[in-house]
Length: 180
Image (cartoon, rainbow, N blue to C red):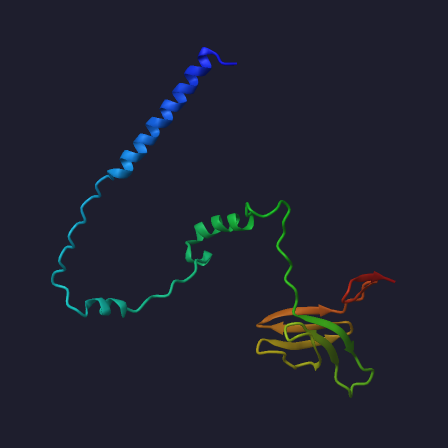
């Protein structure tokens, strides 16, 4: 149906389109003037080798931030923030540090002629197995101090650690855990 309102609306649309088209033609034909390009300022009193001297300045390495860089009263404050990180899931606990040494067995002879020995697996060296006696060393810091039935005492940089033989009812395998 053609009403007076529809005719006027159509006429207004056509008039608006013609005005817009005319504006675009005028803008394209007469572009806006660009601002003038400023003249470069002359360089004064800089010797020619000054820039190369600046490049040869020794650079100080950037050291990462550590909590020990702060005064004690601030490091305790930041330790709380680090321990209770907001972006960790609720109930998150830090993973337990895995011991690099695992006791596989001990050999305690009945007579006093044979030395005490232990079989220890070292996970840091690609799961190598070593048979050791008292006084043997694995690396510069780790030394065998004592061997008892089902346990070995290690001295690591002045700190003593006891490795115990795992005699739980669970049998641990590479693929999983099974019960007897």
